[in-house]
Amino acid sequence: MAKINEGMIKEIIALVGGAPNIAVCGNCMTRLRLQVHNIGLVNNEGVPIN
Image: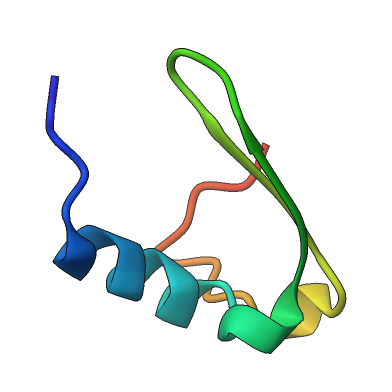
């Protein structure tokens, strides 16, 4: 399993439209769950959306 580092966190934040676009953040063992204010700001190519 990959360890999360500061670079990964910065990349995720950028791909979801920046920190101000994150409304709710949570996690479980295998997933990071985010709710965003504006889905249009999310880079769909870089972030798998389910």
